[in-house]
Length: 306
Ligand SMILES: C[S@@+](CC[C@H](N)C(=O)[O-])C[C@H]1O[C@@H](n2cnc3c(N)ncnc32)[C@H](O)[C@@H]1O
Ligand SMILES: [Zn+2]
Image (cartoon, rainbow, N blue to C red; front, side):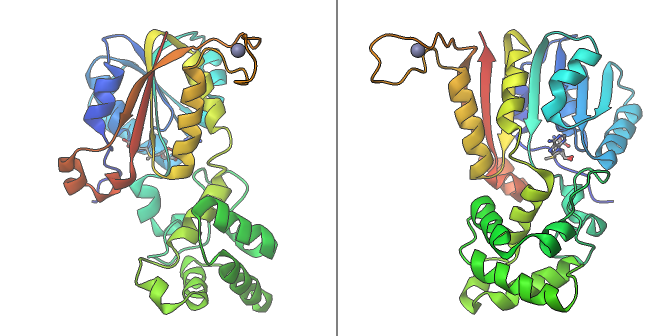
């Protein structure tokens, strides 16, 4: 059986978190439990969240197989991490990790509808009990809303052409499968574009971001997690595309800055105080790039609570 998900930048994350025995760590994106297993094997206590039941079941089975204890798995969006910690009566934690985006399992499982390579229903929800699906976006959003999403979430240069082709096609019958959508995109885009990679790649990325509200609450989650760290605790976030990375970069910058007054003001009136210091930005090693092509777009950013 194919592996559920190979953890990206595992060594770098472990270095960043410097897991201590009995320290409390929050993994907001449990997935197949790759990073979380490494935390548990080093004696850390783990609070792990994911919005996808498949991930929760997979990781739980993995922890049981390995005989780990000291973990609590909660089905939750990581933007509610503060509430989860409150419910568990945990005030401060020693470290936190977000490994953003989708898992290999989600993309490789045709029935999840994330992939333009396999036929499946247009779904793309990370949590299958959440309401908005790719079918809704593709069949119900206006042409300009669609074009906008494709342009802002994936910088798709044929956003208008693709949006127009989708609207024309759905007038005949609703677009219900991944390959149907991929085919519409292929026909709407020029030949030369097809030689630059799969023409549906960007559209699928954009729809997925919209369906899962992937950018909403990201900065807020970073702030909450930083807030809940003990002094010296680390927050590590792995992003996979420039939009996510920009949000994390800006959120971290603000968390690591004292005064945020306008430069034209001679004395500080904002009273803003840095909560954390920047530890750095990391990319996968050459070896990892050779072994796992998925790591190519990963960027790890780390801050430390003051
Ligand atoms: C890249 S995978 C994580 C892989 C994991 N680090 C591992 O080693 O197996 C991302 C996971 O985060 C989950 N996820 C993404 N956004 C989320 C959110 N806002 N709240 C909770 N889980 C989320 C996805 O369902 C997916 O299982
Ligand atoms: Zn100021």
